[in-house]
Image (cartoon, rainbow, N blue to C red):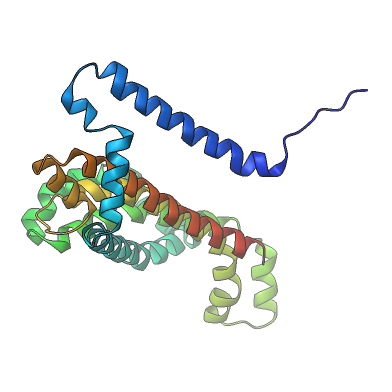
Length: 257
């Protein structure tokens, strides 16, 4: 009987992803040079022009200053979402009455695009940091609530019975049983929240702030620095990928404990 030859792990985990990236660059080059025809504007978005702009940006302070501003907003929005979302998720998962009271309201609100709140956020909070952080928190709060509630529902009732039989107080049961049990669900919610935040971040940073990756994209467009524009778009994807990898790494570490 013939045996199926499987690719080596190094090829599977490194070679194939790199091949996929290489094919994407080839398609990008072909789209610019063939589908773009003789357009001078299309040539400004070429991989070569983008690479040259990326090297220049990497050696200067601008892209890093804007990235730092964006990451600070992401951290503030995520922190606010955790501050509100974790207690609400605990209530939804623990109290059946509270779940019935809020389920329809929460499902309705989470279906509203966070960007729809832009005009309201600007009118109430003004222009600047506050409306951006508000929009990011509105984006991140729902996966946190839902995943924390799912973590509560997944707790083995025998754990709670054992804690009660040992005379654990309500606080001890929370920190010794509930929090460890929902940790992986919470990390899943944080990963989903970061992915959603990263999508909303760029348009949210067009609300009158003077720093951030979203602002920098508008700046490159206004300066007609199209190589820098494409380099910034790719940098946003790379930074978002790195954040997602960090959360996945934390998830695996916690799940392996």
